[in-house]
Image (tube, rainbow, N blue to C red; front, side, top):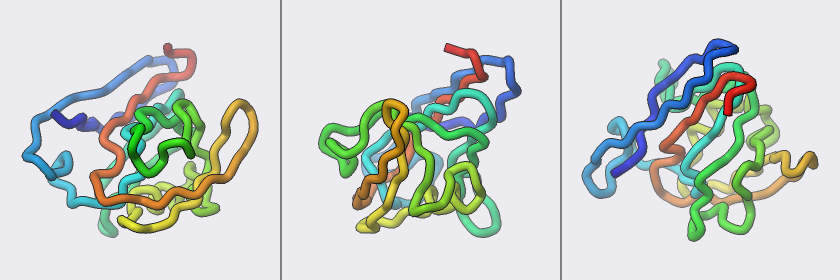
Length: 150
């Protein structure tokens, strides 16, 4: 079973959590996406604002965030193990704020073997870490909750 995201636009005040699971053939990525760079982080948790992952446009896939997402599902044997912590907040990718269109494109288009600089907020402090992406499916889940949601 693989988690599959549903693109969600959240209006402030409406707590919404979307997660689904779907069977996929071994080695296949959700929604028919090709294998891509994988940081070993299965999901993003957005609180308030609007967030979407793997939105297709004329240039390929992109992610879209109006708020900085928290990371969850850090794989114990993945590329981010011992580098990234559950509940780190993603601020920027390779120096580009994640809340900008360019930051969303960079995160969605990571290639296997690519070294990625992540700017994170952990326990109120900003830190910078480097992660080398493995081959995989990238983020497979998105949780979105309105401000004040639990």
